[in-house]
Amino acid sequence: MTQVNRTLLDKGVHEFDNFMSKVKNRVPGLSQSLPPKYGLLGEKQYYGTAAALSSVSSDHPIYPELRRLGQDIPNIPKLVNGHELTMFDRTMFRYYRANPPGMASLADAYETAMTSHYYMADNATKIELLRNVANFYNVAARNQTMTENPKLQIPAK
Image (cartoon, rainbow, N blue to C red; front, side, top):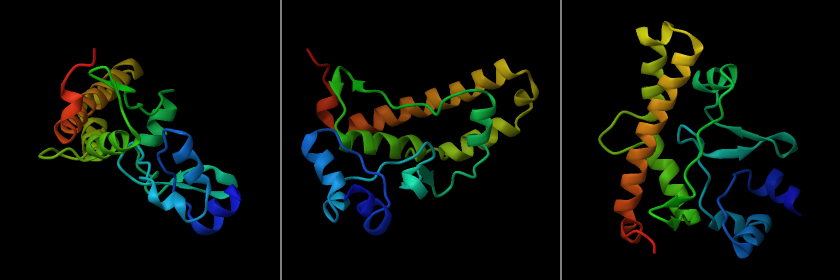
């Protein structure tokens, strides 16, 4: 039934964080009630053939460059101020990391970094530059997620 849901009814990858949402993810029709999972650059994630992950805009030059440099796509934090992020918080975080209010998109920032004169250096410098971009956008996403969900602003005990 899971394969039928993915291939015929709902090819989107969804966030889930507990048993019930995991069940919803596998039931045709109910999976669409879960928030979508966003990729590094804010694109919705989809299942491709044989349930392999693919995305709409994975042709952005950052993806092959991260693979060439042996770097993983930056993950989002599991905790903010000691609070575990819910599936909706994670969706918000991914969205705001890719599209922070009042800033260039993460895709544009990576594009700018990769075409700057600093990027003509050795691979270690390139890795450091890309990590700095990711960290800057993670901080912006963290701050915006905390603004949207005020309970995250108070440190957990």
